[in-house]
Length: 294
Image (cartoon, rainbow, N blue to C red; front, side, top):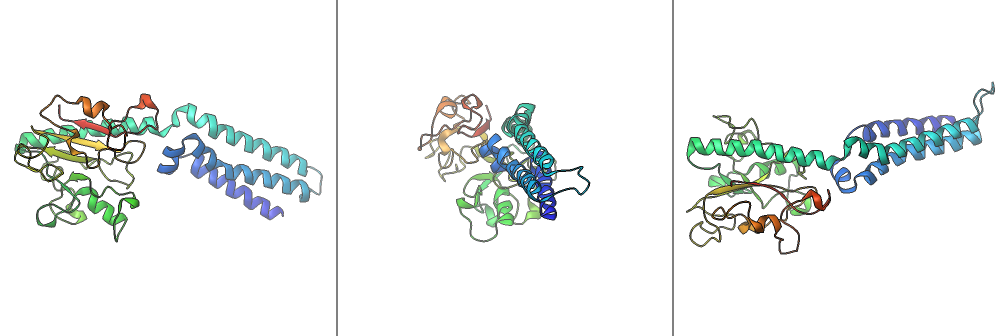
């Protein structure tokens, strides 16, 4: 029983080090916040309690210096401290992951927007975009090949991927060609920045541009049969809810009207969810994070 108790303590300490002292997995951390953190340290707390109860019943120090009652008190005290830290300290000391990821999203979008405009100044056009592998010659989008690497085989939205959403087009269909548009031969940006809220690790923001004579994401010609007009681009991040409200509603960004438009800022999609994420509605509220050419 003593060995079992020590094993429980070891598991509890390891679990605490892995979870309580570092970031939780993305979905647990974002979806459940402090509750997720609390759950992550419930195991060491329970281990400590079991260890203490076991010690009370079975462990005796032959010299009388350590008793089961002492271990029980220590275990319960330690477990309580751990739970209180997880519930209050982790949150109050600035470890809420959503504000940090939100700030990082805006920072990454600003840098990427500068790169897009620099690209336009050099080439008089905006970086190419596509959906999945719908580019010239079967080329792929950045997020498509990245998801393909992480989730080989048949794809579907249930895999948590961003398939079916537009993003930066590669100049080929292999991973080693991923950084050959905005990054080479002129490094407008060192690499495509990952969306901090991405459900597929490393995938960048949703992106498309609007240029007269070219097709919009729905396949219609801008300035002809497309509901949008003008010249511009938009970057979209999923936000803390980890999904996209914009999916399929490509007319939310129309460069021919003043941006950001009222519809983009205050509108809702066909399911009634707000297009734009607003932290004043709560850190875990619906909506996407945008940056547009204004």
